[in-house]
Length: 468
Image (cartoon, rainbow, N blue to C red; front, side, top):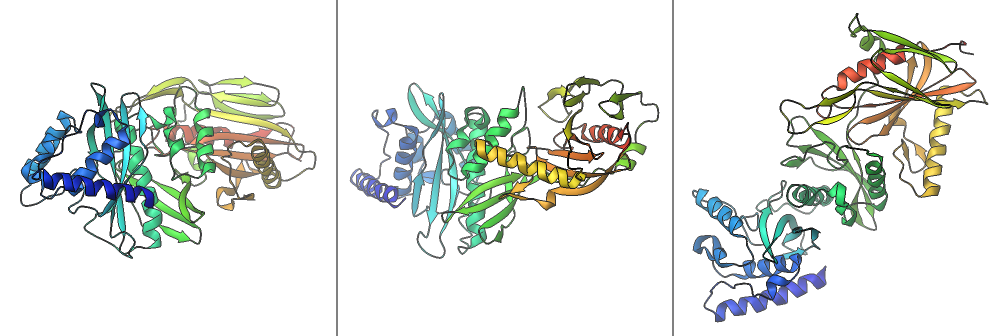
């Protein structure tokens, strides 16, 4: 990092001398410079910009820069014209010039690119502050040019807060989402090109977990970093909560009522994002949900494999040797106030059938099975989204429940923008797992209907041979 700053300092001095000798005229980009990489284009522009002795927004010197697209120059003209008695610098996203800046490696997707610029004030002091500016570029006649600059959504250079632990961990979250949202809005889909894989802000374990979530998608899905299907316009952060080498930050997006939790770990002295918890939900109250169902609902009964339950007549059941799938009708959903939609099963439940030779209780069997799955994933180097932390069951994700009047055990798995809920019930010889996803309404308009259907099936479940 210091080596990058030293290089930029030397470049800044050289640029400053050129400006003075040239009577402070703007420095146009040479044809050779325009053929260089996106990060070098950005670095060259900012070296010139921060070294310029006068106010470029006042004298309009930025208009002569060949590093900017014509459209972006016109956008800046509009921003400056809208100022009344003051404003901010749309190139720096601040009111004052930073003392230092660092340009990250570019993310390139075809003829578009995105570069993060770290701006630093009061470097090396207790008042040090930085924020990140996302610079997007596009190829124009074979040359990279700056097409837009996206300002950070949190923090302000004018505030100059003292350096603190919450600011450090929150800054990691802000830096990641400044890049991520800017990239998704202007460059490409990070889920498709897997550009998140290059982020220094994620632990390797979490990156692998996201790999596994994406691999599970078939024809669609959600964004596990945003816990939504759309890209928000902005976000804000709550103050970080620090627990030794772990921290949590609540993220609020521009979607009404939408928030999620980012968990961080300190890895070799640096904060990194270790997990993203999209939503929490209390256990479904089966009796209340069942009473809320329409009385004329057409039902059928499944009976086989030693157990039975009721399900809607519009569903179909796929029966296999050791599991079943209950699939609702295929539907398309498009909210009236959204520009997105999805197609899929109206509801879906997976039912697994397992031996229970040791006559374990539902809770004991489930804990043993979940840890076994975790160990298998660890041995295979595969991501694991179950309720296990550092080899220990996460008790916050567990609950004692009842299914059809039988004692049962509930475990919540990470499902991206949903909870993947598994409920285990046993008759002493076999253990049955009933698994389904619970979504927040903002991510799935028919979420409550799905919960009602699952509650129906759970409340009518029973062992046909009678529990032991």
